[in-house]
Length: 223
Image (cartoon, rainbow, N blue to C red; front, side):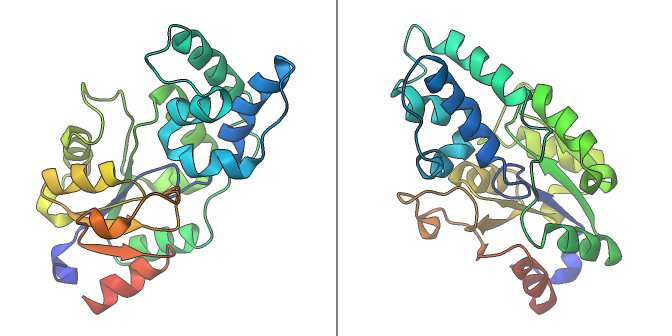
């Protein structure tokens, strides 16, 4: 990990890193089952795949993949269901407000880089006071690429006016670490997120890992 004074900004993934959207995502997919007369599935089945968005939720709900002929229509139905829920109480993870306040108090910039489409990212972040101080919010369709491509992270660094090498990226999926490293940033795996039972952050080649948001502050202090 680079020395603390070399880091000028911290970027975060959104779902599973800053906000806990799994309940709303799972509910959106499960409603599709119950609307079809199928039995509801427990939230515990949806949660580990929340970071995979529609692909993960529809895979749990219907056992289909994006290659299925009906996938696009089901995905749009899922999106509409999710839109009706996401502003009703998507919570941030414990410690996130304190983390952001501390970063700002230390003079560090911060922002969000997510694969979530702006269709969802923009209204969600506008509705939550936490994001008013974010210097950059980059969605999955802000640039021609999405993670694990580094371009969204590089775009966030440009918006913050900070060199990529002086940014840190925190995320709960391997693609976050791949994108961060490709962008030349320090990378931190958020193991409290939606990794699922099959994921092993030790294999992601992140520079560091945290089991709770506030551990990031300790890491920055100790570096």
